[in-house]
Image 1 (cartoon, one colour):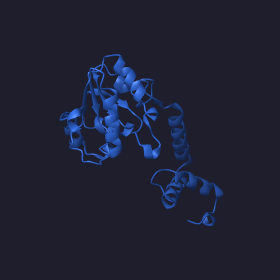
Image 2 (cartoon, helix red, strand yellow):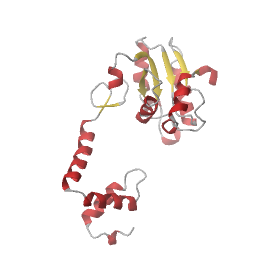
Image 3 (cartoon, helix red, strand yellow):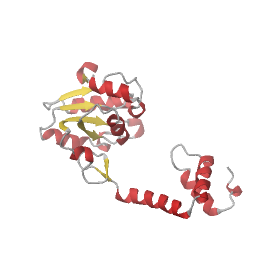
Image 4 (cartoon, helix red, strand yellow):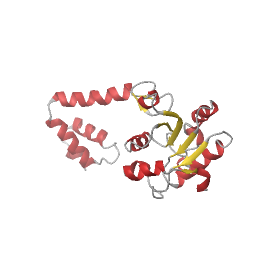
Length: 206
């Protein structure tokens, strides 16, 4: 879209900002901005205030690194959950995907990504050391590796398995009901739930 066709520089600036979002091109950004312009001013003000408030106030759980409104997330603060069972996931979206199955009663540890040398992401860029510190406390009985079944996910699983092999902890991985190469967040709830229930000892997958 030619910038000279915009009747307003303010409109153009708003479109440019919206088009920075994933999956949003200039045409979609234009449609969204025009929609906001059609609404009452209160709508636009509430929309922008909500985004600002979220960005300023949202936290990461000091235990599992999930997104939270408080220093400790609701899952980690729930005493009815099994805190000796820790599900290791790549991202916050994976926590939401697993929670939607209602098949898991333990807690989580969000790595914040997977090891990917091609993208310049190494072990030190992930929350592996905090997980190591948890294991040192001796309260964890089982680690479930629930990373995406991609090459990077498998590489990270193997790295964690080797790093934590000296601890007296059971290490399992989700069953391969999740297809090779699948991102966890896009797996349907039934398949993901069954994969958690039918998890395997990690060494059986080597």
